Image (tube, rainbow, N blue to C red; front, side, top):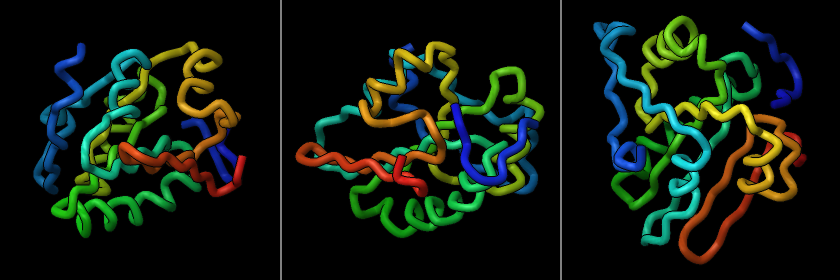
Length: 156
């Protein structure tokens, strides 16, 4: 995965799970993070119902990703009752889920549905998401049953 700009390292039933509501009192141990491999994630990228889906690929170590997250949270809050679903797909490193990702989720009170993608074979799954995607993040897909568009801050 590539993050442009200021970056630094630092089972099918899962598909239907609800986002975790995080409060200031939430502890890291209380957060249940859905972790998917690509085969488990792929159905979320191809739902054929009446909703509009906004799928954002991001990571806590990617500064542009973090900068745009509040906009996705606003979108989620504003349109969740209008048949729009925001799904944030974290590409954080699995060994850092408890030390980086979950604390980030609590600190920023993320309310959108969050899933972590744990699939090291990015050369296989990236072109399945978008044949023109280099793997650079942030990357967003907006789709419904009739149309699909891809968006990147860097148009790559």
